[in-house]
Length: 449
Image (cartoon, rainbow, N blue to C red; front, side, top):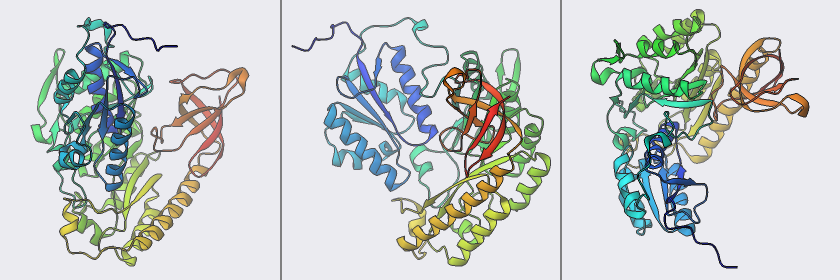
């Protein structure tokens, strides 16, 4: 039987691959929102799409390899491929391997991506504005969304090329951020995950300028923005926060229940020699003392972080220092990466001795074992307590299936889960109270009360 042709008037179809961090996901959402506003349809499969967009990640060599694999797969399945994202900042590597791609653009170059789509598959018509949801098109479930407050980064960490890929810090006016947050709240979002490259540096580039929100002005300042977002009555979760002194002010908002008692801080290491070689901002601060002071103000504070093991010049003593620090700091959630050389990163010109791969692997395993033990100990403390849980996957009711959700200490995709038994059905987006009955290294189990 001959395959039925689509009508000539049918909307063109776009298949989308979004790789990398939540900041890249927000870029993808903006591109998709624009395309949907112009009448394009999204399809989950490359086959049959009029064009495929691959939003790449270029932070590590392993991420680049994943991006190149995705581009190759899209070309094999479809043939019409547009590449954007962080790898697009260095287009030669893509063009050399895949000269047949239609276009290559860098991160945040939304207009260039849309123009390339127009050339590959012109929009069928001009849709009415009300065909598009007020909050735009989101790639996350309806009950949570990422809120990007700035682009780029002013830091000069020696292992990182993000400033080269995404440019310097560019903060959004506070009123623009808050208007977007209000739209998301009206659309049913229950949790906002605030993201940027350096969230606690928000507003510094625009000198914390004021902007008009309705009949009042709001400042582009980290504390002010956190307070304003807290007034929306949603779960507000802060990601990619550096431990600058002014972060202390936000802890009080957590203690008041204004925002979630959660901070995602990419510490990367603890040994002074390694931090100095990494050129980490705020490394001169007494970070451990700061963490202890935060927990005095907000005992429920949950800290999640990422670390790098095997950085050039890292000694056995440096690594042992990191493990001791991790134990004393009692980081609730932590992941580790084995250092990878990144072309163009200053770390490759420091002249420090490379750590052998087998040593990196051993240190990574020791780190994860240490962190798992810490997490298991902290999770046991939750047994018998009643905690708030936001439901991600439905359950409960007659089926008897456990609903899957997260406590205030858990961000989606990267932290643990809370599995909840309930006599009544629980839906995605419900925020309920559960009594914790048992725990594992990263997850808890309980019953709705």
